[in-house]
Amino acid sequence: MTTIVGIAGITDRIGHLIGASLATNPEVKVRGYGRDEKRLHSDLQGKVQFTTGQADERAALRAFVRGCDVIVCTYWGDHDLMINGQKRLVDLCEEEKICAYLKSKETVQGVHILNSWFMELVWSRHAFLWDHDTRTANYWGDGDEVWEATTLLNITDYTATVALDREAVGFQSFLGDRKSFRDIVATMEDVYKIKIKTKRQGSLAELSDQMKAQNYHPVLYVQAGMYCMLNRQCKLPDALDNAKYPQVKPVTYEKFLQNTRLEDLPTLAG
Image (cartoon, rainbow, N blue to C red; front, side, top):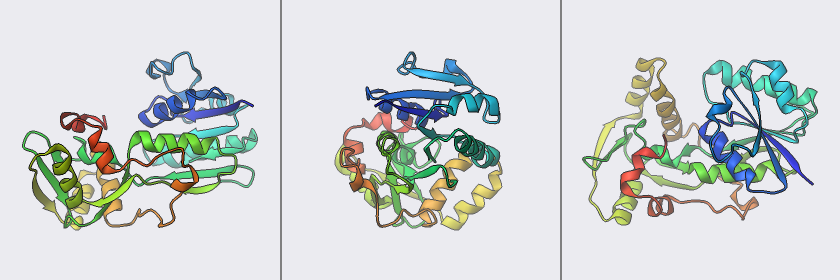
């Protein structure tokens, strides 16, 4: 029996990766929704039924969700998009009797995928934590705070698997690994056989002050996620859901680094 999965935001990084994972399954038909079909990644072209539209275009959204079994939302943006944009999708899923919405109302089985931080961001140019040229690791806090993270590919594989699980409902929490910043640096030194300098950028309170001073800036999203992770505001529950899906193997910091060239680390998050 074919399962039709619609991905709202399929042209962004996460949407593309989830779509690519699902497209390998012969029992899945993937639909996509986005502003511009030309932005659809080349490996999905010809494999996805694409609907063009904005997040507030109800007619286009309705055409997209109609007939789907599952809707996955990968929106990323401002308050209006993340709150009102998703609400429009949920409302339309209810009206069109879609059985599952990943990202609730009584008639829609809502699923929220939680994964804390993306592992690639630790070395991203947007986070300003890793200086490849000087081999310096910059950190906020005291260096002993826990960094919970999952790779982009790992969490998209988990999400694609959950999308096909008709019993999945509620919050689903997945984790690749958790380490302190000091332990992450030690793992890098062990994997790459290099010596890394460390530099403290300030306290978590100072990170918060810097975020407030930036007002609206793309870097703010990265720093806000990091801040909420480090102060444990977004701590994942102790009872994870990894074991429900043994076909997906969690990727640890060590495994991620072993499979990544040192010079490629700053580029992986885009």
